[in-house]
Image (cartoon, rainbow, N blue to C red; front, side, top):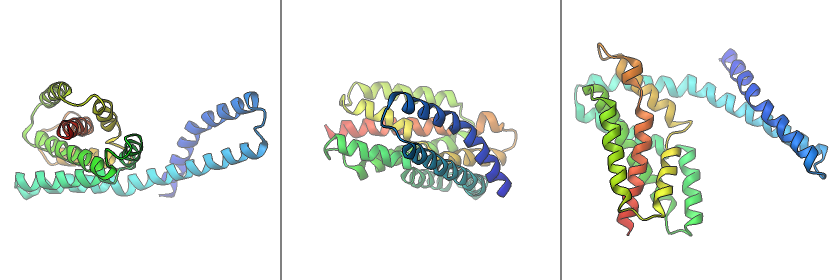
Amino acid sequence: MLSDFKSQFIEISKAITPIILVILIIHFLFIPDFSISNALVLILGSLMVTLGIALFLVGVNVGLIPIGNAIGSDIPRSGSIVIILMTTFFLGFLATIAEPNVRVLADMIQIVSENSIERLQFIMVISVGGGFFIATSIFRIIYNVPLAYLFSSGYLLVLLLLFFAPPDYVPIAFDAGGVTIGSINGPIFLAMGIGVTSILGGRSAISDGFGLIGLASLGSVISILIMGIVAL
């Protein structure tokens, strides 16, 4: 685990250091009152961010991904498609509720809309859409449904809903699709799809185990558009 943390820390440092250097150069050149103390605060904050991300990624590799693999490889053994779909739906629903990106967007929407779109309601609608399409993705893997069919039908539904949804909800819906998958639920969903594929004979982990992220994002877009239509 220590070696994993060290490698993650080095990789993140390589990514963040150029950004910090550019910020420091811009501040010293164009902001006269930018002091050395401000620079030290920026460097200290960047170090804390690097440590936090490295620890988080170690936690993902040690905890979240194995959990997703275990769930994905175990639930098909039940032999009941109802149990499989219910389990994956609730897992997708709860993981999306826990996703920080969703909560940040919900807070911003509530502020901008002056509480006309409630934070909790917004999170629940996104989570239902994400959970439904995660369950649909597992159904697709088990029954070998082509991914193109689901995406084409899903986006056709989005185009249809755009004619009826309030204009204010359209950009919110697409932003919701962008934040649905993040650092918490993304690894779980991917690992779960690969886990399901691993116990099905004659399946490719690449062609069958992926696609869950895109479908979950699509589910959030659809659910927010429907929410707007219902709110009319």
